[in-house]
Length: 322
Ligand code: AMP
Image (cartoon, rainbow, N blue to C red):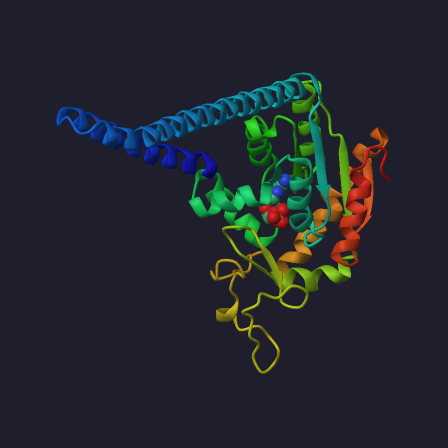
């Protein structure tokens, strides 16, 4: 491109030089200058014309090459579009459930799976929090239950997911985070998928003992806009300052990338966690038995360093993975 601009500029310069020489020659004739003087300009004119011709043909070949490249790129793009269309039409969607108690790391590893597979992570918790912030009808209904660590009604979350999975970014599949949370939700999910001949293709269960979750949840700080998650002990923001007792100073909790204030979720408290864990063991864990007979459930030890967890997640995602 730069090369082409340079060529165009220099050919424009040569063209203007050539035209000034041509004008000069014309005025030479007009004022009947001597043959000798005219001869003086001839080689220059010829050189300019040849240079100009050479440059013009060089420029033409560059342009032809560019057109060819563009056609080639366009062809490659079209081929990629065709392949995409074939996958979207004939291949089953990749439908994953990222499973685990609050604080297991679904929000940490979900985006990495998103990047790896190119399918979106759908977090019902995030969608509900957005509804609460927007003060929509759903948000107003859900706010109090969420703050207390209870479960929002099946009807509401099933409705949210039913709409979301029809969006274009879900055409190759999606990663469910925080859904289904009850057997009714799992059965409804199966039903809506069966309408297109699809089913859940993988459940990745992040296993963490309850005992370590309180520290994880109560030390968690979040950048609301991006969803980036920090932890006072394991992943503190660069700006964090602590008071005399070692507790973080809230005003110092800032997002590393934007410098914006971090927040703690209203349900990330020890009291709400008790309720959330009761809900998890009582209503959510039975979903694993629902999917086990299909051979799609993989366990991951999420009570280890992040790299170790990610390694196991990758193994679980492989065809025929653990
Ligand atoms: P999460 O971000 O997944 O921890 O979800 C936060 C809160 O949103 C939960 O504690 C519930 O109150 C609510 N929630 C999210 N997903 C569901 C769901 N599938 N069913 C019922 N409530 C949900």
